[in-house]
Image (cartoon, rainbow, N blue to C red; front, side, top):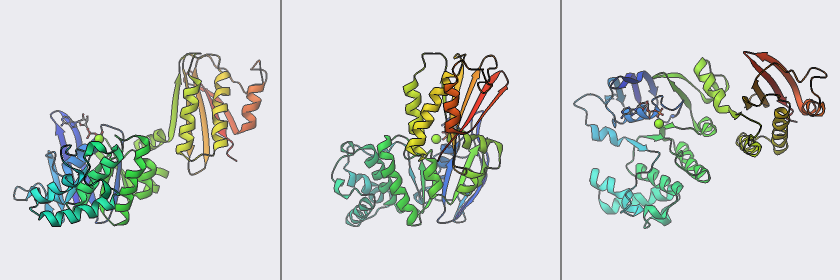
Length: 360
Ligand code: ADP
Ligand code: MG
């Protein structure tokens, strides 16, 4: 359905897209992930010609997008785009926001369009808000209206650019639920997202973008469980872990524990394990002799079900596992009791204490 060949986009000297190639079939749901600034938005914007590509070609149903003879508005109509910010007209009602496109751009009849608009408002759960104005809606509701506004144009492909990243955490799930619904209906979609669990559950394929190309592409299992290339691995590892820096004795223990609790909730780690992790972090920090540069990292491996806590600290080597190294042995006994394994090494001027937390 969509074929992309050697697509490039430069902004002056800046090469954002170097050489993007992809084939997307009808009904596929593609999630695009990657560090910020790697051209994910630019890629979507090139796809529906909000940005003019520097080079390469894009075909939709065999029709070249970049051919001068191509009817651009018609092609663009095949691709609905939902942005981070909802871009609704504030002086129009929700219903009017939906009908203005089909009536003004497609020349559709008003009554027919109204019926259709209600259908799509129902689909996103907002039929009762038809006569309200955008400012009377929450962020999550506005984004659902934005999705309905796209659908009423009856696109063949929907492009989403981080549709939930401007929302309060409480409103993310209602928007994701609507997108899930579209997946079930077989809509072809390309979604740039930071919601990794979501990407993993709904996508048929995941594109990891970096270095101006689709650096790695595969099924969600391949990309999230066993990424093959170095940068993908590093990225997946980074998003899976929590890092907390400490630069002095007056560090904020409560902030650290709250972040750890949230991390555990996000990864559906049991409450008692979460409590243990927080306690272990506090104990591990108490073992340190130099507080000037400590990094606490918490990570979770879904495959093994392991929760790992790593404490890296600058300073002279102090191995707390050596008998007699600690004045107070209680802390280290407690740590050993609650961990499957505890390892220590000293590398590149840093103490490394690595704990595998008992999960059962
Ligand atoms: P992502 O969505 O992956 O975070 P973007 O596509 O937004 O990345 O941006 C990629 C790079 O292109 C960034 O360095 C950004 O500053 C730059 N960029 C994006 N749009 C423009 C523009 N219109 N003019 C100049 N530079 C731009
Ligand atoms: Mg972006």
